[in-house]
Length: 157
Image 1 (cartoon, rainbow, N blue to C red):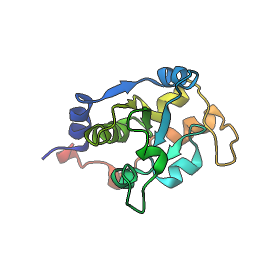
Image 2: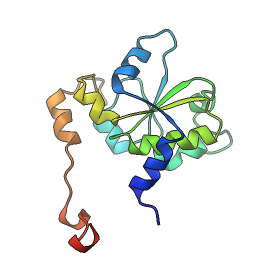
Image 3: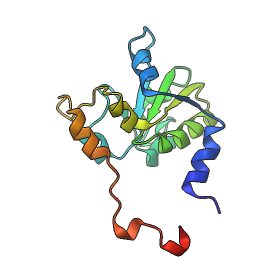
């Protein structure tokens, strides 16, 4: 049986990753990438990179193709464009980038360290009103908080 960490590690062999500062430079270039945020809608609503496109991981495959209720034209038509996939920490985005490559996306990247790293580099995140979220607020939001039932028992750690 493979764990989530095993799946992510295996995907990293097949994909291209970029750091937040690389993405920031890409956004300042003439060929701006599509920033694809694959987090859940409530995560995106809390804060996101301005101008990013929300397509939750759960509907990614159908959003990438025509003839589905989840189809997102901008995403379907980006198969030969630069697409940077982002999530909270860079794990879900790695899996998504691998899937997108398998679906024919030629220039897809996963943002290493995710939005946590983006915030650590003090790059701007915005709320639903387009207002910049203070770095400290984002730091608090991205802090991992596990409940006791989410922690593996000692005999399974």
